[in-house]
Image (tube, rainbow, N blue to C red; front, side, top):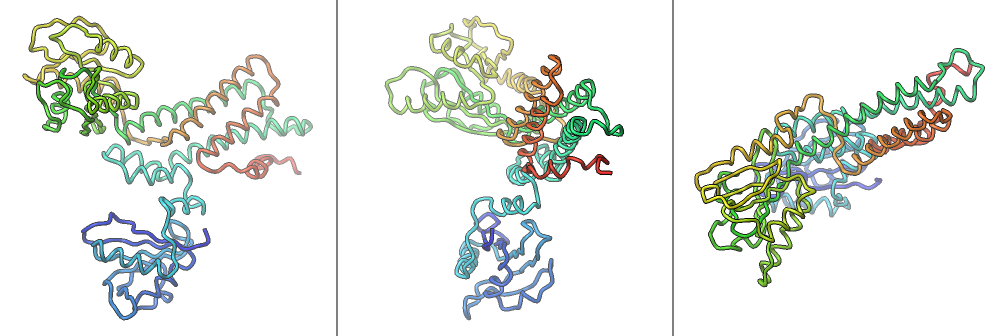
Length: 447
């Protein structure tokens, strides 16, 4: 944290401009050593025209932005060199900075410094990465909410409410003589805990929905060879992406494609036909297909309308039964020989292009895509953060169970503190000193 770092902040390649970012206490001084102007005399948040020089050789004609601490993203002195776009030029500028003793930044280190220096919290740091990777306008809208601190503020307010409950319990126990202190009764705790639980449930629901909006839905198309998996993928994306023949085993590796449905990205994986085979290459494809099935959010199991269920079909039905699944009975233009029942069945015929819209409607229905809104959307974006929120929900259930069993209120304080601590971990604000500082904050017990 005491050294100065640099990195290329734009995609390396041919373009109009490239930006090289430098951050740290020596940022301005070090960049100044490779320019033809005196950057140390420039005011903060100004842009200067300059040349980048290597001894007497001019490397590039640039614009240099100077931003002095603490009003920067990292809260450190920051310099951004706007070069002409191009691999050779940009890398040469970076090379000169490294020769000045500036260290190459680690992955995500600028955002990490912003967090460690208190500029942003953990949910906002995650939102920076989410915003870079968004693929749809819906995703962009909810990420911007997190970048503004919507989720962080909600969690902070929940922690404040928990601190107030804990403070009341402790003061009631340690200072029973103070009549102006609100007595924290079982009923009051029940009411407050119930309200907090509703807020947590809302964050959990939003977080699970946000994964769909920001990352899309990963869909594995599985089935025996020659049931029409690749044809269905091509019809869904309206492009001949996968090779289609009537030869079983044509698809030997996974084929990936994406498209947009109701503002949500659907990530399709067309897998190799799953069957017993002696072909070594096909065996690798089958193994990859099974791995894709395990990782998928949704499985499209393709069956042949013109054939009775085979042993392989039955095995696929079994291994996919615990996944969110749609059974697609394909080749309905042929004589029906298949007899199967399931609550999520769609009948398709890729020759006559029938059933594809119905399949899309079924996907939309399963995930309630048309109902996903982004107004005031708040969420946590990582599995770790979501699991912490879910663990606080479990703590609340323990508190409720304890209240039913008439456990003493001071015993509930342990679970309340754990909820408070865990929520702090979600946004990176858990400090023991914080609880101590807030212990008597809202009470006039010192008079």
